[in-house]
Image 1: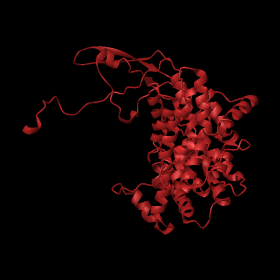
Image 2: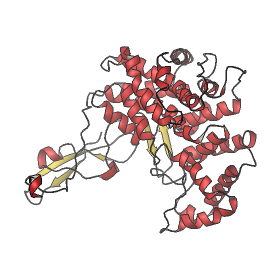
Image 3: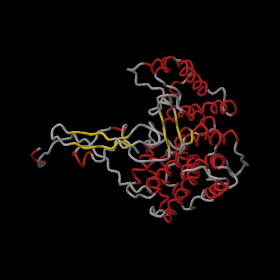
Image 4: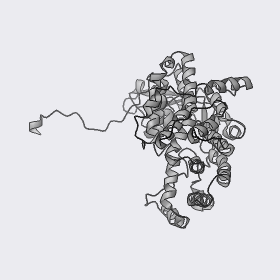
Amino acid sequence: MSERHITITDNKSGKSVDLEVKTGTHGPPTVDVSGLYKDLGYFTFDPGFMSTASCHSQITFIDGDEGILLYRGYPIEQLAEKSNYLEICYLMTYGALPSPNQLENYSSMIVHHTMLHESLKTFFNGFHYDAHPMAIMVGVVGSLSAFYHDSTNIQDPVCREISAHRLIAKMPTIAAACYKHSLGEPFQYPRNNLSYCGNLLHMMFSVPTEEYVPDPIAEKALNLLFILHADHEQNASTSTVRLAGSSGANPFACISAGIASLWGPAHGGANEAVLDMLHEIGDVASIPKYIAKAKDKNDPFRLMGFGHRVYKNFDPRATIIRKTCHEVLEKLGDQSNPLFEMALQLEEIALQDPYFQERKLYPNVDFYSGIIYKALGIPTNMFTVMFAIARTSGWVAHWMEMISDPRQRISRPRQLYDGAATRDYVSIDQR
């Protein structure tokens, strides 16, 4: 941390306050405004927290201008090429890459937590068959504290670790059960001899009457998607997990809150919105019309899956996943499917059109992930559920970091009140 300070003076009262300027490993200098209200009686106003650092963190770093994403200091490009999702989960939780023995023990621990309490099966029956899977996820994950309350003592590091293992292990099982419930098919038990992603595919697509072997291409694609979606700094859902956790809520409730936040179309629902957009366009011949609509600032139509709120350059995850997307489409996708044809045409336009180049509106990870999920046979309403599985490792890591941080206090954002001034109550017969 640096010794720099910024002095703020109130012209009316003449009072001043020195605000410390803190410098982290990466990123812009950060002004500590925690003393501003105490010393001067002022709040800061920052809608959407676009300029506010709400916490210290050592988990993920993003440089949106340069297109950089680091997990615990490791570039996402290296991890995507060389790692697997469970190794990323270990890295997120413990802060370092595991040794071979550590990874073997950790993987074994996750595998042996994949089953759900049998009573949870009846809980699924309370949901209508066509309920959105994310609605079921929010409810079921939140209910886990009623089934596994032996690990909800957040002051005990061992309980925190067990909860982390349970959440990462059981999320695919819950997700697959949500899918099976919508089909009216029996839930499939997890299999300990399969990989994390292979087991998810098995629980989603196998039936008791037939043998099922996960397709290695699908398994590889899911592993990559999960790595790329594991964490993304202080986004809406991660901040929600931290906000809920700051009150001392149990970890299952906190992750459930994160899932609810992720459900929004501006966040985890973006890849689902990409497919909705492609359906709206309808045909390759209509692409020029919709491109013109996207360029018209007076037209409400927007190309979903292009550009990013944080990345002002190419989304590094999109660069990585683009190759896999084309590989999946070539080997698993229906080449006659007009959705895939439209997606590839839109991608080509975005990469060559000066309008998109000047505004850096390149395809992002949501654009490619939605196309891949579709090619793997995963229904559109399950896209955000897949995102939730991947992001659980990041949520858990942030929750554990927050709980163990001695500087952590209950989150209590302030507001700029601009409502009515003081008013006297008028009885109903005089209004």
